[in-house]
Amino acid sequence: MLTQEWEPFADAIANAVNAENFVQMIYEFIKNQGILCGETYSGVVLVARDTRPSGEELLSAAIQGIRAVKGVMAVDMGILTTPQLHWMVRSRNKGMPATESDYYMQLSSSVKTLMGTRPGVQKSGPHIEGVVVDGANGVGAKKLYTLQQFLEGIQVNIRNSGGEGEGGLNDRVGADFVQKEKIAPCGFGGDDVGRRCASLDGDADRLVYFYISSPEKKSVELIDGDKILTLFAIFIKQQLNSIHNQEKVENSLALSLDQNPFKEECHSVTLGIVQTAYANGASTRYLRDLGLEVVFTSTGVKYLHEKATEYDIGIYFEANGHGTILFSKKFLLWLKAINEEFSSASTDSEQWRAVQRLLAVSSLINQAVGDALSGLLLVEVILHYLGWSIQTWNTLYQDLPSRQLKVKVADRTSVVTTDAETRVARPLGLQEAIDSEVAKYSMGRAFVRPSGTEDVVRVYAEALTQEAADSLGQAIAMHVRQFV
Image (cartoon, rainbow, N blue to C red; front, side, top):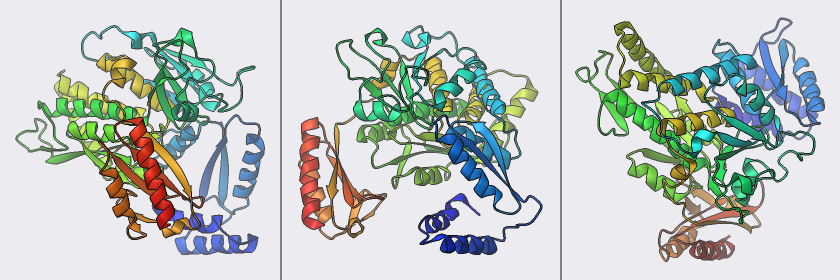
């Protein structure tokens, strides 16, 4: 059964009217799916917790619930980040080593390969000094300390690790705080001006970068998930260029038998960028100007992840810093075949190094879920590879000003959207009103979507100036009130 196919069942049991109804649905599901339940163990559930005080009690309750199911064994993996547990489940299902130590070894080995295949002598710059990481006083900071012991060539300075006097989890620290408030987290100040800084969130599945441009200002220059995605896309596109030995690479790269020096089967490599409508329009335009295919999905990681699996290499990120890179099994087998051909020929070339880099990226990035630790390391090695400072990275494009609003409504289900939530199908007339307002503004873009949890309609507006974005957002909010 595919992961996505479990969702209707998960929704149903989450909304069970009582305990009896809950148990009945469980038994029906077991029967329909042919799940074996007996005295011998037919299933294993991995569980873990983070560093919050409530973790022990919640973990104990979860283990008791799992053990109540006949034939299912709970395995306590200890204190972990959320992405580490996802990584372990994926690895075990693939028959691969899946301990915490294996996680660190795989990441550090990949970093070593990537650092060892950099072309030439790198430029000096602020990025060589290392990255300062805000750990959000969460579990990610503690795991980053452990990970450091396995790394070579990557310098990490950790703050807000949850130690005595450092504050509470996500309290004026962390990726969500920095991304929404656009100010430096606690523990960062004037002495950090110009330095490359990063923030994890509490359970380490989100990552944003930032730098302080002036000691007099509290605000920061934010490098959000859109720009992390762009950095990854640039790097991967360069490696594909090197493998195909072409000046320019298109979205779909066709290797004929004549073009392919390794005489593999003809293979078309597809590189896809997946975003939601909340991605800044400047990032989408920049990526498309690079010749990359950008597609949109509905809001939510489950939609982004599913769409990314349709490509040989699928990259997705939300602006909040949650995202990853997916590599298809077919593409990885193709890369490994090329790597073996080069190895047997005992030749060294930029093509071979590009193959090694992509294989290393596929091992470094967490393909199960967004992972701030593996994402942080990949950003660092790419910046080293390119010889870029964080300021250079930030100038790839300038974000368009935007405004997000919420409009309270009696019934959010009266608003129905289409085209990955970028267009309104119902109520009739609302989309035409939105289009009319957008046309009044230079670089204008806007959409509305019903909230998934409360009776509000969310409004997103984007334009060339902040004043224009604010005005556009208010005008569309007015139309929502009139139509809904």
